Image (cartoon, rainbow, N blue to C red; front, side, top):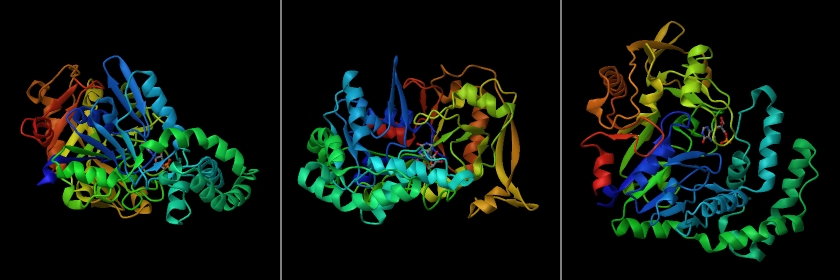
Length: 437
Ligand code: IMP
């Protein structure tokens, strides 16, 4: 069964869980890595020896020569940014010949970025806190059936035709939203001409390519971006991104049936962070939050914004386990908690005097929730050199055990630092099996 050869990796919190590192680690054994949603709002920092790579569209698998990297149909792709990313990688000696773009992926155009920023301004204090990359407007145009797609990059006539159809309306929207003078068709065509030429050879039927790889028994990693609580349906709407970030989206966003989906690894930070607006029950705005931000270097890869920080929230983790069907957990940044005397873990919420075990349905409910904490003993040891579960201090083991018990999902991978080598694989786990396939 080919689903045994596939692994979906998703963020189980609000994004920035360290998926890039986990994916990069497992991608070294993958034949194919496919992204299935989102765009350049994602920011993966991958540390490889002395090299730090910041990737936005491109799957972390690109760093492994021989791994096929696919941008699936569920993505929105900014061609100008993608070309910059490709050039940066090539400048640093990383071959990019193994990248392919779904002909059905939608394009983020210059006007989408301007509209994103204008929408945020119009929302004022109620703004979403987007990355400003044009993600929402690009997905909105996809749903409104007036988007441009990667296939349009491959044919100058079709690109011009499509753009000339949609530009007058976009210019009217820009005028209304922010008194923008609008974009000139010929200038846009000139701007996009070199990127069309650069990207056209990479545009293909990635669904077919992926199906063939799966049929041939190749190992496929489905790389999620953002996190479960940013999912357009299951997240803290409206403070979410505009795509479906949960594991089921791996299938529709890459063009293969759900029978191809195997295990689902949920990546969780050992604490919680969030960028942008919206409720966050375990947020620490005082010293504890500042400490986590400093020790965890919690600043956005895409925007540089300081991330909001707080304690681990098991209510969220349980919810993520349910809506994603998580088969295992990857716990990252455990080393950041070293040195704390006590570590808080929210095991439930209290709302209007009631104890709540399940994640509320809407943000109004969530806003009223206070975390119910369990207080676990911390550890002083530097764990960044630990390479097996047994070597961890007993308090760190107990913390992980508590996390497993409260979520009902086994911890399968533990990250104790940004480098590939700083990874602990639990014996008998899916990641171990995956690496041995
Ligand atoms: P957008 O995806 O740029 O529209 O932003 C919508 C929300 O998702 C904002 O709160 C962003 O901060 C958040 N967001 C988008 N991408 C990421 C990510 O990769 N990591 C963390 N938060 C993100």
